[in-house]
Image (cartoon, rainbow, N blue to C red):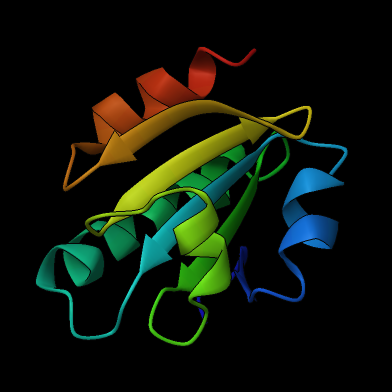
Length: 108
């Protein structure tokens, strides 16, 4: 797992995401997903530069079906930004690092 990005599962989702003091970006992904692998380095870069303001976590949809089902994840990668335990914004598919930064900065 990349530095600055926490791997979560259905059991730790509430603690790590909904009960987080900081806003959280959740990356719903799977190992076989090409766009998921393509966006991972962008998220790692952002975790390195913005990790003091926002928590970055990954949830493997194949191993953890409950949480993606709850948030109606239909395609991956899906990134959901949570603020104060609520969905703030959702991004589906591959996007640029600039778009990710812009979306994250809307929370502050």
